[in-house]
Image (cartoon, rainbow, N blue to C red; front, side, top):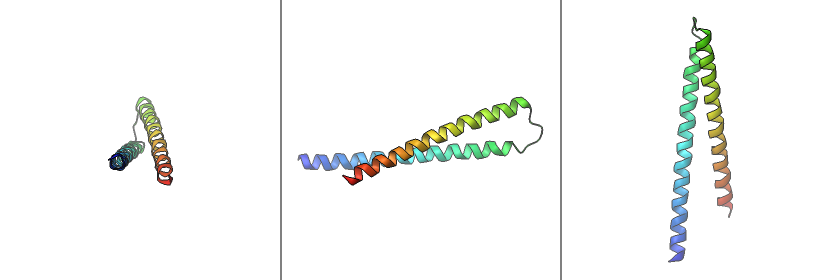
Length: 86
């Protein structure tokens, strides 16, 4: 009984990790698309200094979010590698 529970719990944990990884990848891709969309606004003429600064601030914050998510994805894969080696 204990062996079944241990195997079943391991499978559930693996499924949760995979779902979490997919969520992180989706978030990262969404932020990347936001950055691409906002970068295209730099090409427009007639942008005021305020609009330029706001856009630059948004891009900086969004890039920070992408970096944080990237680190979580890397950490997630490191944990996955360590657990698969055991």
